[in-house]
Amino acid sequence: MATAYEIQVTEAYIGLLGRAPDPAGLAYWVDQLDKAVKAGQDATFALKKLTNDIAKSPEWTTGLGANDATTTAGANAVVEGMYQNLFERAATADDLAYWSPQLTGGSTTASEMALNLITAAKGNTAKPTDGEVLGYKQQAATYYVETIATSDYNDTQATTAVDAVQGPVTLLASQLATDAIATGVGTTKTLTTATD
Image (cartoon, rainbow, N blue to C red; front, side, top):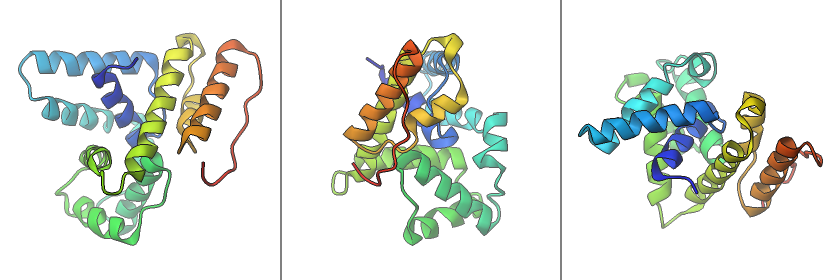
């Protein structure tokens, strides 16, 4: 069972990089988060610093972060990418109108936006769909990182493990695909259903 810190780091990976974390990366960032909190740092601040550090990685800067968020087009691309990564849906016009000006104006960074989206989705009981989808994605990512041997890990499979996961059916399909990779038995299948 994943710890609270493992879940937080996994969700940050999903939002910023669109994949399950690699075992070494997960262990490293969880350790950094734990050390920061034990040293007296506020847990929210420590998590914010962690996501800022992930957003400095070459994977971010050559991926979603390659978009120039100081322009409207670039900011829109970042917002769209994060909504797809976290919630498996397109950002609405209202989502774009809210987040893009914050990115272009510099009042929010992409890593801060990721944390804010995660927090808001998990706390929105009036409209829980985004939080539920994120929960399924986190479960798929956690299952992948706990099941795959470190030597068998690769970014493509880690991305596939969370891509298109949006409910119990797609979570199960992801877990079965992970089992097939881990054991070498069975086949993997790409889902084409729009909903669970």
